[in-house]
Length: 544
Image (cartoon, rainbow, N blue to C red; front, side, top):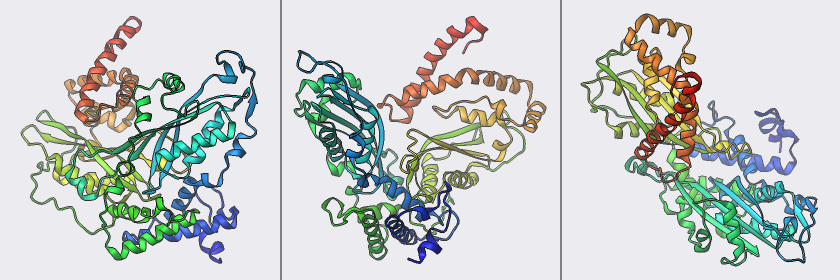
């Protein structure tokens, strides 16, 4: 145990808390997980001492312990002091207030760890109960009880059943109903990612559980529940059907490929089993017997290799890098919505999103193959990465192919933002890499950014420094300035419209393809512009 003082805990971590304050059991658990993570990193061919990975074992250990803290929490401790008397109709006819009326808490955002692959999945939780005994429970306790069972290794139906059972025994109501909308990231296999451009990125399941008044699926109490829920995409039929199949829920169950060879995979699988034991779980439990192998199979997608990206033989845009802005014979072209899959090297948690690539070429030049650009994105994505480095690497790789004038925008969702106690659901990170004339031409940057669907436009003048502004005024002709100023004056009115448009588009789940989304975005933007124009013209005389 001497390592406790020298190698593991004699440091201050990111939030300034010394791990030396942990109990002995917690210290031993973290040390064991750290050692296992080092085995995994070495199995991927990584240098565990390089900058960026040095603290990864500790960060992973903390994240896993946070994601499974529910095993050490007790529902009784949360509920027992949160039951409050509330007089209502108890023996009379009907239901009223705290004594019998349905109480529904909607849209609780949770995350849990899939017991089949150890990847986090997102949960939208809806909890309802009918009080009895003239007492109600504090509303925040419903969320805390649900979170206790979410912070365990889970699968959707069992999670719903455990939340329902705990509330039934904890508050003894007339009935409890729980509905969960679960989304599991469906990471493509490395080889399949290059072959399947229409990969379905999410596996989704709607499950429910009921007790007391909700025990029977045809109970009228369920009708009240879904009437109050007011969700068109979730219905009583979803709960009645019970169609969730575990194999289709977690994609790793249907991909038995081993990408690391039997030797390293066996060692790495043993390391994952050690992690499970350090979290207080039995790897031989029926639900966990295949988990170490499945996790290692998935992790093998990101094995470090010395393969080079061979771009010889591909037709490229002539490399004609010139200072200044683009001329009338050239145009800004773009390839948008290239799919991205990667793994955060700081926490070994996936991040995913889309990549947009802009470049400058002459009107006569042919377009570059989208397949080639997508392959470049995958080549750099399927590695241990950070988004900033990934953006730069993509830009540097496509630059020779696209003529040197390149702009890359990466928009990604990071599961580490929900799976480490931070729980920033819905957050998104955007990064930009700029090469060639894009770095000095704000008009070109503006034109490319406007081609990105759902992009929140910003007044480019506010992003220009003084030198860029002087160059713009000096080098651009009057027509170019007039066009740019016209566009820029349009940006402030579009700022709120584009955010509202995007929220509207995201709420429609049938908009899965990029082309459909773009068409719908344009149609809905015109509607919003018309509304904005009619409301603003009377005040300032300027239409949206």
